[in-house]
Length: 85
Image (cartoon, rainbow, N blue to C red):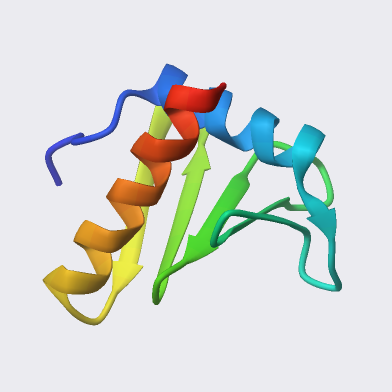
């Protein structure tokens, strides 16, 4: 998959959500996205708009989604939060 989102942007968005988000059972929720990590912290996740993104080693990520519309909405949320961070 072609990297459509810069890894630095993803990490900046993740940290912004961790800092400003509301705690839920799933993780921190902020402006339509939930951010959480695995137990060891090596893999972080962003979830929203029907998309689950795994971001891990070597600054690679993978998106799981059902439709291109879900993916587009997810990326728009990432970009909107990135402008605030």
